[in-house]
Every structure is written in structure tokens, then in C-alpha cells.
Length: 237
Image (cartoon, rainbow, N blue to C red):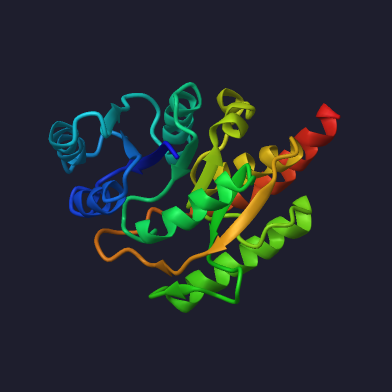
């Protein structure tokens, strides 16, 4: 399988080299780093990786509106037009372990259009989260499932693998959300278009370096997004 791993970055200079080494240890895997103008020099670190691994690491330096959703839209549009069989998404802070990539890619090769690295497939598989963060995440997933009726245990996981053909069917340019809400919007549009979704269990480890980018604005947008996508889907049918 020809696998492209998309990694959005913002102030991840310490963790990106470690993650890149773990991903590139597998034959057939390439990386597209999407740096959102990191003030800590992550973009320079990414360029150094591209020079060290020519043909296996590419870097997209974004200068427009910042945000996780905007970064993914720009990068995934490029990936959807490329030659990869499978396109993966993962965080750069080492909370997503590259060891799970082969199982997720294998599930995509077996017929899944989208494979989610799931923290909640068999109970709760999260390490080093404070109680309030764990309660917020588990409640958010139950809330999203209740509103959208999506049969997915972990709706907000950012660890995903797509068959490129399925990714190309999504209206990425029309997505309006950012942060974790973008992940919900993307998942809902995939299920609405009949994509076959499966989940692979992972253990999520809270970042060891830097600070979480979760804030009140992201939480509010995430709370509203399930209703927005459902209403939009009803208008489209």
C-alpha cells in the first residue's frame, strides 16, 4: 500500500522528528507536514526532515487563516488528488502512536473507506488525562451520537485513515468548521455519503510536551456542529 500520512503542526518542533521517524520506519509510508506558521520554528524542522528524507517528506507552509480545520482542508485536498492508496491523519504531539498505523491501513485495504483509531471501542483507552477532560470527551461523543445517529464510538478522534477515493468524494472546500468540530463535520459527511466506517482500538496518551489547544471557543463550536450538519443534511435531501 502507498500510504500518505498528513500531520498538521503548530509549535511541535520537539515532537515532530520523533513522530516522523516512527512513521517512516515503514516501507511505503510518506508524510505531508502542514505547518500553520508555527512561531517556534516547527516549519524549519519540517524542512530539515524533507531534506533528510527526499521523496518521503513534503511540507506545506500555510499563510492563510489559521486553524486545524483549515490546515486539514488544504492538505487533504492535495492528498485527494495524489497517488496514495490510503491517506492518514494524525496529531504531531505523540498522542497518536505510529504503531497503530499498519492495523488501520490493513482495515482500509480490507474494504473500509474510513478507519478511525478509537479511544472508546473497548471501554476507555486514554492515559494521563485529567478527570474533567475525560468526562468532557466521553460526554461529547455520546452527545454527537445522539444528535447525528452515527454508529461510531469515537466521533472526535483525529487519528484516521481514508481510502483516497472515499476522501475525494467529500466536499472539503465547503467545510466551514475548525478544531474538533471539523472532525465531526468530516465524519458526518462521510457517513451521509455511504462511506464504510470501521474502528481500530488505540491507546491515546496525552501530550508530554507543550499545551493542549482546546479552549472554550472550540468547545462551543463542537457543541453546535452536530446540529448544523444534521440540518444541512436534511436540506440536501
